[in-house]
Image 1 (cartoon, protein in one colour):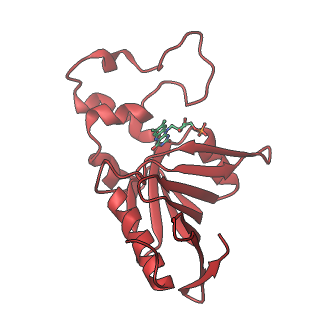
Image 2: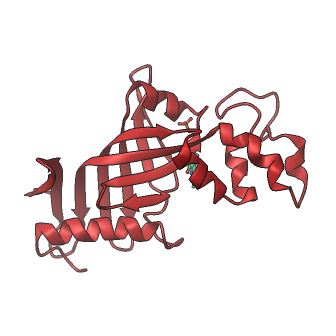
Image 3: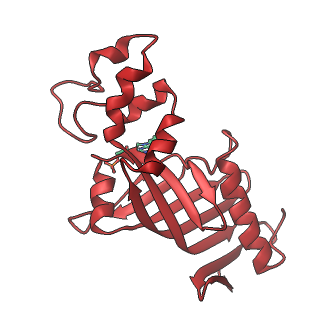
Length: 200
Ligand SMILES: Cc1cc2nc3c(=O)[nH]c(=O)nc-3n(C[C@H](O)[C@H](O)[C@H](O)COP(=O)(O)O)c2cc1C
């Protein structure tokens, strides 16, 4: 893809690259930022791993710990903004989305079963993310020091594991190009994507 020839091109290419980021570890879209608005009304952003993309459903997924601040933000205001940047392609995609939290349900169970033992560490600390500690430590129970930890000793962390399914409401795509930048906005309206070119 050089520059976009049509709105349809821009939409399909954007979703294609987002989907590919979940399949290819080296994709620059794999680790976007998400922004939420806090209980204090202030915005926060942070990196997450893009776990799944379903274009037909307009869904983007990430995983998190239920005890993290972003979950409290989303419980209060279930809206978030994704920011993707691919330096090689000079492409920025911003997505405004509505979030749904899945914890302890069938969807969460299905995803949890596929998470290998070492990766379960991200949900396994004794205190929740962002809690004060006496010393610089990851606050994991002692079993995590074992090189070959039995999966059964990681199951307790399922209680914290949360899948955030976000449904896109709007996309803003910006392509930087020496022949002229291009920007396009898509809004989900009347059950379809309505696009228009914008001044970059
Ligand atoms: C490269 C990278 C990937 C990360 N992936 C995730 C992730 O997928 N989910 C997550 O909850 N936190 C992830 N984090 C940690 C968050 O950026 C953040 O520090 C943590 O979740 C606490 O955020 P909060 O206090 O705003 O909720 C990642 C951090 C980095 C640097």
